[in-house]
Length: 263
Image (cartoon, rainbow, N blue to C red; front, top):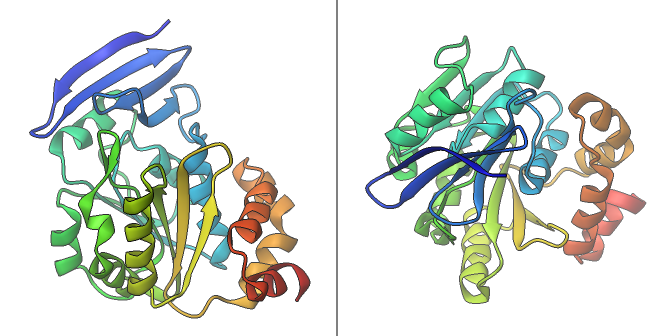
């Protein structure tokens, strides 16, 4: 049975925190969960799309600096803090209430070495951000049942790519449920990433994970991800092999198939 833990609202939408079977969830006034964590093991990613976003970690040889835009209840930061305890993690969130809830109800530490909370919207952050700072970035910005308008602007992806190291990779959660908006998002990401973009359609979900690259899409990294998927599964507790298969199937180009599976 679902139990209401907290009810409030930002300037734009309601915010609910609920418990069900030991799992705590954040919702923005709809049935869709922004975040879910197991309070006993908060570093385990509960929602499928967050596990798919973690595929970006396979595509950088030694990720040590992370950018997370869109905090929710802090599932990805929990995951990164557990598996990369010595890393630098910058978290950007525009809603002060969401930051407070992540601390008060989702067990995210307020202070930890290497962890920084930035209370800004994505545009103000991009305007002031240092170039070539991050190895891996995660972009997950949604309102109640809809993608944030910034996701439709090529300049957003262009600015975030500039924040990455030359071998950096960015994972973006988008929604394919409204075809016209989805196509607009894909065009914006393709333009902003200058074509250095791969997609993963999540099975039985409307979520699509975009992978944008600061440099050329590396043949070596793609082949290594496939070759070592079992090692990554052991390290992160996620079976990445189906994700890599979906990556091939979603990107139908013969070039990708040759690089990833036949090269």
